[in-house]
Image (tube, rainbow, N blue to C red):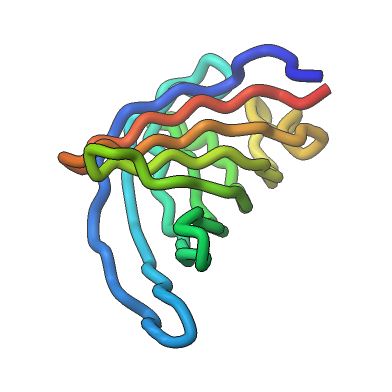
Length: 133
């Protein structure tokens, strides 16, 4: 069951790099987004690998870090499925695991997150994460 919304962010896609084309397209993508996580404002920076399946759906896996200006930090790992949208955007849904040793974010060590991640055709990213209870 989905619990509370624990994170929201809006940012920008950065570098894209084609890693493979055979046997299928695989692209590495970076992004950064001002984000709120457990009520703290900070910056979320991540990189994910996205592969296109034969049915034109996507599979992805990523890693990243959230850091607040006062030194709170959490790393994350995620995996998800996605799809291309008609206007050139992409949409992903998946799960996240967190690691943190800082006081305000350490509760994330026991949290499984469920996310939505959208990348608009212009490169704008939007993310939302819920705690999975």
